[in-house]
Image (cartoon, rainbow over all chains, first blue to last red; front, top):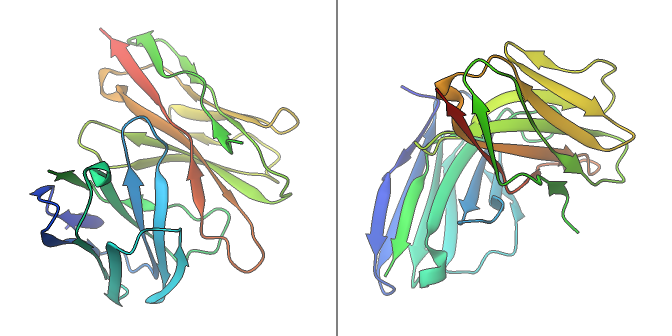
Length: 115
Length: 117
């Protein structure tokens, strides 16, 4: 198993659909993250969970709803998205989210297209 | 103001030559960490190298080295002996200490490196 696994790799959805992105980490980490990567923009931090508690919500619209049932799994529930939400969504994990030297391990992302 | 600035949208290098990717940062925090990540076309972000703000020596990891100039607030990545597999997007990132909570890793816009045979 690779360190951080994301499914699905690609997702196409209509604006009225409801879908979920899944992330699983096999590294024994305590912190998990959702990032959004749009074309020609820096990666944007969306949410951070540490020990299954949400510790950061970076002004993300409510049509994105994260869920972290345990330290190994992270979901991003999507509903009534807009075309501008089309992007690569990256999941990451780290040891506990607090150190300056703490590196993040990323998954391969879900490429989302909203029609 | 941007926290991380990468001024080179794209760079080209000949195989086996060295290349420097530029990164400047902006912070008033005395304690911070600087990272470089590589993103190949597969999408996964791969950690390359880390430099702490208090580290006296420049970080090195194999063919990667970080040219850390604290007074200039620059953290350039040097890749020696470029290989075709080095072709990818490269992102500079910074993690600032914010008291008891310092989860945020801020990324630059990236540099697309192409290695020519």
